[in-house]
Length: 248
Image (cartoon, rainbow, N blue to C red):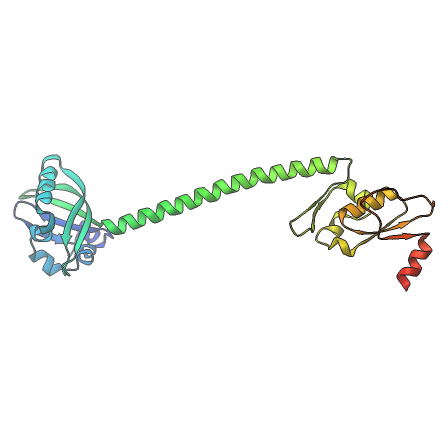
Protein backbone atom coordinates (compact mmCIF):
# COMPACT_ATOMS: atom_id res chain seq x y z
CA UNK A 1 0.00 0.00 0.00
CA UNK A 2 1.30 3.46 -0.96
CA UNK A 3 2.27 5.91 1.77
CA UNK A 4 0.82 9.42 1.85
CA UNK A 5 4.06 10.86 0.44
CA UNK A 6 4.08 8.31 -2.39
CA UNK A 7 0.46 9.19 -3.23
CA UNK A 8 1.40 12.86 -3.39
CA UNK A 9 4.41 12.03 -5.58
CA UNK A 10 2.30 10.13 -8.11
CA UNK A 11 -0.42 12.81 -8.19
CA UNK A 12 1.86 15.78 -8.77
CA UNK A 13 0.99 17.69 -11.95
CA UNK A 14 4.68 18.52 -12.42
CA UNK A 15 7.03 15.92 -13.91
CA UNK A 16 9.34 14.54 -11.21
CA UNK A 17 12.22 12.08 -11.39
CA UNK A 18 13.94 10.60 -8.37
CA UNK A 19 17.55 10.00 -9.43
CA UNK A 20 20.41 8.20 -7.74
CA UNK A 21 23.38 10.19 -9.11
CA UNK A 22 26.00 7.80 -7.80
CA UNK A 23 24.63 4.72 -9.51
CA UNK A 24 23.30 6.62 -12.56
CA UNK A 25 19.82 5.23 -11.95
CA UNK A 26 16.24 6.51 -12.09
CA UNK A 27 14.67 5.33 -8.83
CA UNK A 28 11.15 6.60 -9.50
CA UNK A 29 9.18 8.58 -12.09
CA UNK A 30 5.68 9.96 -11.66
CA UNK A 31 3.00 9.84 -14.41
CA UNK A 32 3.66 13.47 -15.39
CA UNK A 33 7.31 12.60 -16.07
CA UNK A 34 6.22 9.63 -18.14
CA UNK A 35 3.96 11.90 -20.20
CA UNK A 36 6.67 14.56 -20.67
CA UNK A 37 9.34 12.06 -21.71
CA UNK A 38 7.07 9.69 -23.64
CA UNK A 39 8.26 6.56 -21.80
CA UNK A 40 6.36 4.08 -19.68
CA UNK A 41 7.37 3.90 -16.03
CA UNK A 42 8.92 0.46 -16.58
CA UNK A 43 11.08 1.77 -19.43
CA UNK A 44 12.11 4.87 -17.49
CA UNK A 45 13.23 2.82 -14.50
CA UNK A 46 15.40 0.78 -16.85
CA UNK A 47 16.97 3.87 -18.48
CA UNK A 48 20.05 5.59 -17.12
CA UNK A 49 19.82 9.36 -16.54
CA UNK A 50 23.03 9.72 -18.56
CA UNK A 51 21.13 8.26 -21.54
CA UNK A 52 18.24 10.70 -21.16
CA UNK A 53 20.61 13.67 -20.91
CA UNK A 54 22.96 12.51 -23.67
CA UNK A 55 22.62 15.80 -25.66
CA UNK A 56 23.92 17.81 -22.66
CA UNK A 57 25.70 15.17 -20.60
CA UNK A 58 28.60 17.43 -19.57
CA UNK A 59 26.19 20.14 -18.40
CA UNK A 60 24.10 17.54 -16.54
CA UNK A 61 27.18 16.24 -14.72
CA UNK A 62 28.11 19.78 -13.73
CA UNK A 63 24.54 20.46 -12.58
CA UNK A 64 24.50 17.25 -10.53
CA UNK A 65 27.77 18.12 -8.82
CA UNK A 66 26.39 21.56 -7.91
CA UNK A 67 23.27 19.99 -6.39
CA UNK A 68 25.35 17.48 -4.41
CA UNK A 69 27.50 20.33 -3.12
CA UNK A 70 24.80 22.94 -2.34
CA UNK A 71 21.80 20.69 -1.78
CA UNK A 72 19.75 22.31 -4.54
CA UNK A 73 20.05 23.69 -8.08
CA UNK A 74 18.24 25.15 -11.08
CA UNK A 75 18.97 25.14 -14.81
CA UNK A 76 17.05 25.97 -18.00
CA UNK A 77 19.61 24.96 -20.61
CA UNK A 78 19.57 21.16 -20.33
CA UNK A 79 18.10 19.02 -23.12
CA UNK A 80 16.85 15.45 -23.09
CA UNK A 81 15.91 12.92 -25.74
CA UNK A 82 12.30 11.80 -25.46
CA UNK A 83 10.97 8.42 -26.55
CA UNK A 84 10.46 9.71 -30.13
CA UNK A 85 14.11 10.76 -30.26
CA UNK A 86 13.17 14.45 -30.17
CA UNK A 87 15.30 17.03 -28.43
CA UNK A 88 13.37 18.70 -25.59
CA UNK A 89 14.73 21.69 -23.69
CA UNK A 90 13.98 21.61 -19.98
CA UNK A 91 13.76 23.92 -17.05
CA UNK A 92 14.90 21.74 -14.17
CA UNK A 93 15.06 22.35 -10.44
CA UNK A 94 16.51 19.80 -8.05
CA UNK A 95 17.03 19.25 -4.37
CA UNK A 96 19.01 16.65 -2.47
CA UNK A 97 17.26 13.98 -0.43
CA UNK A 98 19.47 12.19 2.10
CA UNK A 99 18.43 8.59 2.64
CA UNK A 100 20.17 6.25 5.10
CA UNK A 101 21.80 4.29 2.31
CA UNK A 102 21.95 6.90 -0.50
CA UNK A 103 21.68 10.54 -1.50
CA UNK A 104 18.97 11.03 -4.12
CA UNK A 105 18.11 13.96 -6.36
CA UNK A 106 14.48 15.05 -6.59
CA UNK A 107 14.30 16.61 -10.06
CA UNK A 108 11.31 18.63 -11.24
CA UNK A 109 11.19 18.84 -15.04
CA UNK A 110 9.31 21.42 -17.10
CA UNK A 111 9.07 21.78 -20.86
CA UNK A 112 10.90 25.06 -21.54
CA UNK A 113 9.03 25.84 -24.78
CA UNK A 114 5.66 25.39 -23.08
CA UNK A 115 6.76 27.56 -20.17
CA UNK A 116 7.86 30.32 -22.55
CA UNK A 117 4.52 30.14 -24.34
CA UNK A 118 2.69 30.43 -21.01
CA UNK A 119 4.91 33.34 -19.98
CA UNK A 120 4.30 35.17 -23.25
CA UNK A 121 0.55 34.56 -22.94
CA UNK A 122 0.60 35.81 -19.36
CA UNK A 123 2.61 38.89 -20.33
CA UNK A 124 0.27 39.58 -23.25
CA UNK A 125 -2.77 39.24 -20.97
CA UNK A 126 -1.10 41.50 -18.41
CA UNK A 127 -0.33 44.13 -21.06
CA UNK A 128 -3.88 43.83 -22.35
CA UNK A 129 -5.28 44.40 -18.85
CA UNK A 130 -2.91 47.32 -18.28
CA UNK A 131 -3.93 48.78 -21.64
CA UNK A 132 -7.61 48.47 -20.76
CA UNK A 133 -7.05 50.07 -17.36
CA UNK A 134 -5.03 52.86 -18.95
CA UNK A 135 -7.68 53.40 -21.60
CA UNK A 136 -10.38 53.52 -18.91
CA UNK A 137 -8.32 56.14 -17.11
CA UNK A 138 -7.88 58.18 -20.31
CA UNK A 139 -11.56 57.71 -21.14
CA UNK A 140 -12.43 59.02 -17.67
CA UNK A 141 -10.28 62.10 -18.27
CA UNK A 142 -11.96 62.77 -21.63
CA UNK A 143 -15.38 62.24 -20.07
CA UNK A 144 -14.53 64.87 -17.47
CA UNK A 145 -13.30 67.23 -20.22
CA UNK A 146 -16.54 66.65 -22.12
CA UNK A 147 -18.62 67.31 -18.99
CA UNK A 148 -16.76 70.55 -18.30
CA UNK A 149 -17.09 71.62 -21.95
CA UNK A 150 -20.83 70.94 -21.81
CA UNK A 151 -21.13 73.12 -18.72
CA UNK A 152 -19.17 75.94 -20.39
CA UNK A 153 -21.13 75.72 -23.65
CA UNK A 154 -24.48 75.61 -21.89
CA UNK A 155 -23.51 78.61 -19.78
CA UNK A 156 -22.59 80.65 -22.87
CA UNK A 157 -25.02 83.40 -23.88
CA UNK A 158 -24.46 82.79 -27.60
CA UNK A 159 -26.23 80.07 -29.49
CA UNK A 160 -23.71 77.27 -30.13
CA UNK A 161 -24.20 74.02 -32.00
CA UNK A 162 -21.88 71.25 -33.12
CA UNK A 163 -21.87 69.07 -36.23
CA UNK A 164 -20.16 65.86 -37.28
CA UNK A 165 -18.39 65.28 -40.59
CA UNK A 166 -21.74 64.44 -42.24
CA UNK A 167 -23.18 67.79 -41.22
CA UNK A 168 -25.61 66.28 -38.71
CA UNK A 169 -26.18 68.05 -35.40
CA UNK A 170 -24.40 66.53 -32.42
CA UNK A 171 -24.74 69.29 -29.85
CA UNK A 172 -27.04 72.26 -29.23
CA UNK A 173 -26.62 74.51 -26.21
CA UNK A 174 -29.39 76.17 -24.20
CA UNK A 175 -28.99 79.55 -25.92
CA UNK A 176 -29.35 77.92 -29.35
CA UNK A 177 -32.50 76.18 -28.14
CA UNK A 178 -33.97 79.55 -27.13
CA UNK A 179 -33.01 81.21 -30.42
CA UNK A 180 -34.23 78.37 -32.64
CA UNK A 181 -37.26 77.43 -30.57
CA UNK A 182 -36.34 73.73 -30.72
CA UNK A 183 -35.15 71.41 -27.98
CA UNK A 184 -31.72 69.82 -28.41
CA UNK A 185 -33.20 66.31 -28.49
CA UNK A 186 -35.47 67.40 -31.36
CA UNK A 187 -32.55 68.68 -33.43
CA UNK A 188 -29.83 66.10 -32.80
CA UNK A 189 -29.67 63.58 -35.61
CA UNK A 190 -32.15 65.41 -37.86
CA UNK A 191 -31.44 66.55 -41.40
CA UNK A 192 -31.44 70.30 -40.78
CA UNK A 193 -32.33 71.14 -44.36
CA UNK A 194 -35.67 69.38 -43.84
CA UNK A 195 -36.66 71.89 -41.15
CA UNK A 196 -38.40 75.18 -41.86
CA UNK A 197 -37.71 77.90 -39.31
CA UNK A 198 -40.29 80.69 -39.21
CA UNK A 199 -39.71 84.06 -37.55
CA UNK A 200 -40.54 87.71 -37.94
CA UNK A 201 -37.11 88.87 -36.79
CA UNK A 202 -34.24 88.87 -39.28
CA UNK A 203 -31.78 88.04 -36.50
CA UNK A 204 -33.57 84.78 -35.71
CA UNK A 205 -33.78 83.80 -39.37
CA UNK A 206 -30.09 84.51 -39.90
CA UNK A 207 -29.19 82.26 -36.98
CA UNK A 208 -31.39 79.43 -38.23
CA UNK A 209 -30.13 79.79 -41.79
CA UNK A 210 -26.49 79.70 -40.65
CA UNK A 211 -27.35 76.54 -38.75
CA UNK A 212 -28.52 74.94 -42.00
CA UNK A 213 -32.28 75.18 -41.70
CA UNK A 214 -34.58 76.50 -44.38
CA UNK A 215 -36.11 79.77 -43.20
CA UNK A 216 -39.30 81.75 -43.74
CA UNK A 217 -39.23 85.43 -42.81
CA UNK A 218 -42.58 86.97 -41.88
CA UNK A 219 -42.12 90.60 -42.91
CA UNK A 220 -44.93 92.08 -40.83
CA UNK A 221 -43.04 95.33 -40.20
CA UNK A 222 -42.24 95.83 -43.89
CA UNK A 223 -38.56 96.34 -43.15
CA UNK A 224 -35.62 95.27 -45.35
CA UNK A 225 -34.06 91.99 -44.29
CA UNK A 226 -30.55 93.40 -44.56
CA UNK A 227 -27.36 92.45 -46.34
CA UNK A 228 -26.28 88.99 -45.25
CA UNK A 229 -25.25 85.75 -46.96
CA UNK A 230 -27.96 84.02 -44.93
CA UNK A 231 -30.99 85.22 -46.86
CA UNK A 232 -34.33 83.52 -46.08
CA UNK A 233 -35.83 80.93 -48.42
CA UNK A 234 -39.25 82.55 -48.13
CA UNK A 235 -40.35 86.13 -47.46
CA UNK A 236 -44.02 86.36 -46.51
CA UNK A 237 -46.29 89.20 -45.50
CA UNK A 238 -47.90 87.37 -42.61
CA UNK A 239 -48.67 83.96 -41.14
CA UNK A 240 -51.86 83.71 -43.13
CA UNK A 241 -49.83 83.77 -46.33
CA UNK A 242 -47.55 81.09 -44.90
CA UNK A 243 -50.52 78.90 -44.01
CA UNK A 244 -51.99 79.34 -47.49
CA UNK A 245 -48.64 78.45 -49.07
CA UNK A 246 -48.24 75.34 -46.99
CA UNK A 247 -51.84 74.26 -47.56
CA UNK A 248 -51.37 74.57 -51.30
